[in-house]
Every structure is written in structure tokens, then in C-alpha cells.
Length: 451
Image (tube, rainbow, N blue to C red; front, side, top):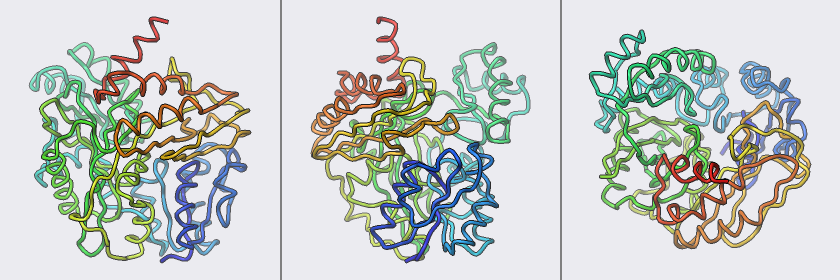
């Protein structure tokens, strides 16, 4: 196993990686910006290095500075976490060129899956079902309208690069498409440096279900079942659970086998996630592949008893997977909610000074936290401050434990989305498993207008 690794990330995911490293007796190197100098993960690491000012382009996206710290500290490998540089092919390549191990897939696969059109075409080659759509970037509004008319409205306009819902919009006619095309292209260009767009046929009111995969450098690969991630705001997930409350065993197996086809075709290594849209008849279609650890990975860990960070480290070190597909089973049910520093009515970030943070305890309760009770939540980064995970032998027990815990959760000094999460998990439709991607607009937003 590695003696020392650097974590090129911040917040709760940095703390999460450090915990596993401590258990495996792997030394850790943290990097931090001026805004994060008092963050919990900085204190947890064996060594910590200041790498720049608060803005990400001056710190966490500064590849050269991170590599310099890795060299100075004697780190052998770099774990990218999620977000930031985790799916940056140039970073992965430069890590390898520096003689270090990138704890993830190789740069070529990251680049291929980071381009939505290339990813679609590769999945088609692998025999994975894809949504009807364009196979090349669209050059103009006029071309976009012609394509949309050929598929038939509604369609989904998407950026070829990036993620997180940026540059993505459902459109229902030519006029809407004309308005959306330029704006989304500019936004994608600003965020990802690439303003190219493409179009897919819109799958209306689907579920968002993803398959967790692991693959080593010796030809072994497994899938660790699915996560239901349908409850989203602004195309970003807020509630995730494993397994899906509705997926049949037949479809679960078929989706897992499709994910294995993708892994084999790509020659994929390390942890990754294949995301699908699933309709009411359980037809499923490839959405994208995330070539990193997911925010919601804890629910998979809970139902499989597998430490995914440990598996990432072992695979990167060159060890063979000891997990066997036939030995993997779903044990119980887990639900995760993302706790954000944001206005629960507008979803706008709400940075500021935390004055109180009380984390509930209880059987089956797990926390992944980025802050302390006296932390400053800055405006420079994603406003997620914690994740609350509840595990139970059944979905009903997991919901019961989650409900109790979230009502005991206390955050003061800033606004948070706790009230929104309480309404979601206590809603009858959530309890019934009616967790489609339109859940918030169908069942949560109407409660705001009735206040």
C-alpha cells in the first residue's frame, strides 16, 4: 500500500479520504486555500500546505502548485476526490508525468467520458442503450431547430462538456430553443471552457438511477448495484438512496451488466459511475459516466459493507479486486441527504458565519461533515456543508431513522435547506417511492406558494 498520498480536494470529501487512510496507516497530505485554513480536514491530515487565495483558480485548480506540494511532501499518489480537478484529464496526465499515481482512471478515459458526445458514441459501441440524439456538436441555432424538429419536441439541450446541470435545459418549441441555445452555450463556455452544445430527445418525468462500478488493472470488475438519485433541484441531487425503491431485480441485473459492458469497452480502471435515465416501463438509457468517486457513494458503502475509498487506493496501488460479483448482495437500505448552506425557498447559496452545529446521533446514522460549529461558510465553493446518511434493515426503517435525525439536526447563523429536506422525506409520495426527477417541482415547490 502507499505510504503517503496527497488529497487534491477540500471539505467533507477530503476528510472522508483521510479517515480511510488513517485506518490503513497511509499518511495524508492536505492542501488548502486561505479561506480553508481552519477547516477540519486541514487539522486531520498528517501534513497540510497552503496553496493559494480563496478563489479556486488560485488554489484548488492550480495544477502546478498541487504537483509542487506533492513533490515536496514525498507523496506517492494523488486522490482527486470529486469536483474540482477530479475529472480533469490534463491533471491526471500531469500527475502521471510527474511520476505519481493518479487514484482514478487514466487521462484518456477521463477525456473521452468528459465529452458527452464522445461518451454517447462509445456507449453505443459498447451496446449500452442511449437516448436518441446528435452524434456531433451543433454549430448554430438553425441547425439545433432542424435537429429538434426531426426528433420531435420536447428535447434536451446539453453542453458537451462539464456537468452539474450547467448548460442543460429542456425546450419545447423553436422559440424556446432559440432563446436557450446562446445563453446555455455562453454559460458552458464560462464554466468549462467549451461552449459546444448537442441535443437529445427528452425523456419526460424519468428516474435518475446510477450504477457503481469498480475495476482493477488485472481484468477484474464488479458493479455494486444502483443508487436512486432522482430528487434534484437545478439538475443537482439532494436526496439519494440505495437500492432504488422500485427497480425490479431483472432490470437491476440488466443495468449492472450494461455497466460492465461499458467498463470492458473502455478498459476502465478504478471506481466510476454509469448514470442512466429510467422511464415508467423500466427502459433505461445512458446519461453520462462520472470517472471519479460520487458525492453519494456512502449509501452504496452502507448496503454492501464496502469502503469505496479503500478499494480505490488498492486498485491504484496495483492490487487485484477481492470482491466477486456473485458474493455481492444488497443488505438493507440507505438514504443520504445533502445539507446545503442555501435558502430553502430560492435555492440560492447562503454563506456566512455558523454559530451552532448539532449533529444527531443514533443507530444507523452516519455523518460526512465539512465544517465545525464556528466555521465561516464562504461564498467561494459549493455550498454543501454536510451529508447525513441513515441506514436501516428496510427502507421504512431508514426513513424513520433519517426523519428523527434530521429533526434533531441544528444549524444556526446561516440559512440551510433543512426545512426542505424535512418536507421531502416526510412526504407521502417519498414514502411510497415516487421519487422521480420532477419530485421537487411537483410536490415541494407548490408548498411554498401555499405558505
